[in-house]
Amino acid sequence: MERRPGLLHDRPGHARAGHRQPRHGRGRPGVPGEAPPAVPAAGRLSGRDDVRIVVVGASLAGVRTVQALRRRGSTDEVVLVGAEPGAEDGVATDRPPLSKKFLADPATPAPPLVSAADLAGLDVRLVTARATDLDLDARRVLLHGGDELPFDALVVATGSTPRSVPGLEPRPGVYQLRGAADAAAIRAAGADGARVVVVGGGFIGAEVAWTLHRLGREVAVVEPLPTLMVRGLGPEVGAALTRRHAAAGVALHLGAGVAGIEGAERVSAVRLTDGSALPADVVVLGLGAAPETGWLTGSGLDLRDGVVCDEHLAARGAEGVYAVGDVARWYHPRYGEDVRVEHWTNAVETATVAAANLTGSPTVHEAVPYVWTEQLDGRLQVFGRVRPQDELRVVHGDLTGDFVALTGGDGLLQGVVGFGAVRPTIAFRKLLGAGVTWDEALAAA
Image 1: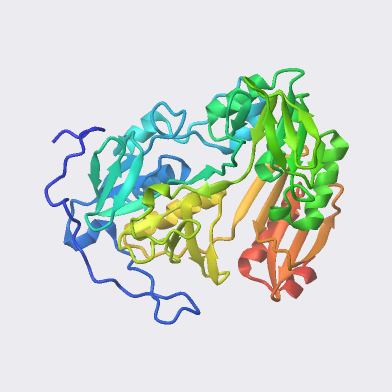
Image 2: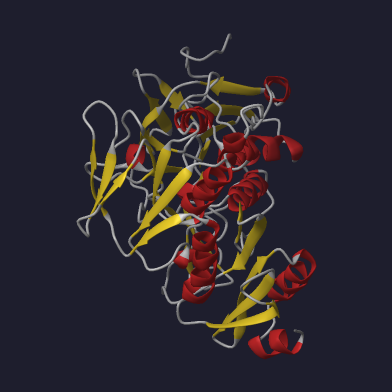
């Protein structure tokens, strides 16, 4: 039977997937009687060979899941559902370069996640549509336009969506950086002499501000917290890098929020909560992101800040359903609690783990979180966690130049923050992965 987007006919036996009794594995500590759902081998569901795995979300985590399934030798039918904004084929571009090389250089091509040839080689059916609902009982994904897509196993890879604030929605001159088209528009709008205001001083906001500053633009950053990147770096390291941004000429407006944006047909100024106004030709919104779970409302999945999963990335209470990337909130054995991570590396790692579980190799996701950013003419890397209550110790260099800082709490090494200093950063990252104590980490410094 011919299969192509828009003709979503059932195959024989796909009106409902077969059901198995769950295999009870390790539950979450502190929750008596709770056990995670089974970790089914998708290719062995009900002893059938004609299994369909549906991956919803054609961004990084979704594409990497498909690739990981094929690397593991899966011959199941795989359907990739995606309608990523600005993507001609529905598949998103690779996002990290968008705030770096691609934003800085118009000659840099948009970075594809996967080429058309490679996608064809994966033997995956691409459905360029948006998922609007999930019927777990019928094992079907509902698509915009009314089509239904049956599945035996489902991977939720819908990522995150920019947080919205009333009055700060995108309009002419106001942008959110989500795809290559956004980056190109910001670059074009921020031509020589343009006044740029970046709203939000997290990793992406600070990186965009630095990239545009290096292009010679007049850049201001508005951040309601007292330092840039404080949530990811803590107050001490965040303050040190904030001072370096200011010394380089980036105008910082800290401790103030945005009251509104002025300009009828195009932005002209940004009004702050302290009563001041910043002239602006371009505004870039970096207000963080929220997990894209709206289409799952009412499905029966646990949707507390993402799709709540066990340590195998299996959605709790829903057999054969997994979540990967930004949308997954999973039990992390290393930390003994549920976590959600919005970074590139985690998207790739969760895709690998989900594919392993789908192909019959029970695998736990317990990797050390990792994020990097390029700004201040260097690479900043963060491994593990930087918590407000943890002790911080600079063990290499100092915070005015290249450095490595460690965070420790509960008797353990919790995090490694490195700017430049690649070799010592990696050395301490290995200690972090080994689970050394705080005293052992300091003794190795």
